[in-house]
Image 1 (cartoon, one colour):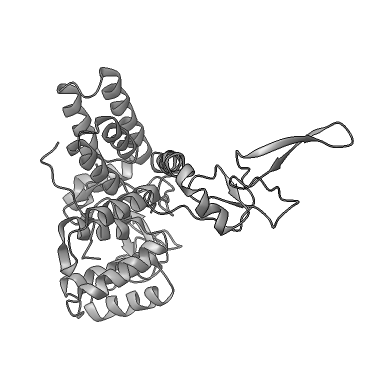
Image 2 (spheres, rainbow, N blue to C red; image 1 turned 180 degrees about the horizontal axis):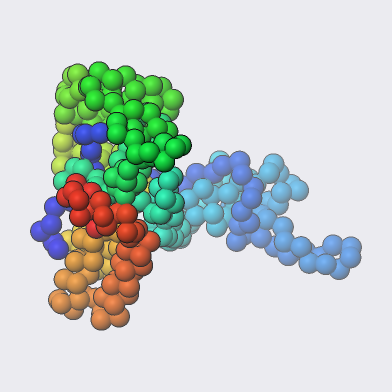
Length: 350
């Protein structure tokens, strides 16, 4: 496991900073631990927040503002927050790390289902190409391999000879010029997958686009900001190995991998597991691999098997991993997809 290289997810076909200084915000939705209980006229006990530094309550000062890192304490002013920093720093970082891990190790929701058969889209990746599905630039839909392969019929029940999009029935595009034109429209419409792929075209200098890595990162940042996890994985990969003119930066690589993992990208999650394993943090590595397996990453299952054989994981861990992968397979398998995979290797999906 320690020698396995992480992978990006660029398809050319088609942070939390725990060392940052604690700051305060205007939200008053979180109750701090620095509070006192008082009795009102009806003998009911109510909790009143107080400034962690000077002890002023909300009735004595402006609205108290929570520490954005740990959510544990509140302050009446920036000055009180700075004055209390030396006392609060250790506890703040500990709690901030706990909150970060709660978010990081939460199983993300699965990706969207195929809009035709309503089954979960497979995530099998071969090199830089994701198999088991295809993006259609005409309507911006991702269709599973089974629905891509299945024949189309018109309203009279006759099979359509000329291949069309299985969702919107637009005739398939064949020329490079037509494909690029459609992609540009999808980019203008804010389609994150089209924006991501355009960034990949800039990276490789294909489809008439000049090779320009600054444009690549620009498009990936935009797509990642729109929630497209693969773009954040690619950015993390670039910083991990210093590709495309960016310097090697392990902290930035980890940050973007974590963002992508929380957005649901199994490859980014697997990469985090590899990094934790190399650092000797086997417990954290196991957590990452377990989540990646539930999202269909078979390489993570192999890693847990390797951890089990070397005593870093228990038999129960390996059994749970196998069960999680079987659950994933039960969600993606269908007769139609199996027929497509048997007919053409490019339709293999697990």
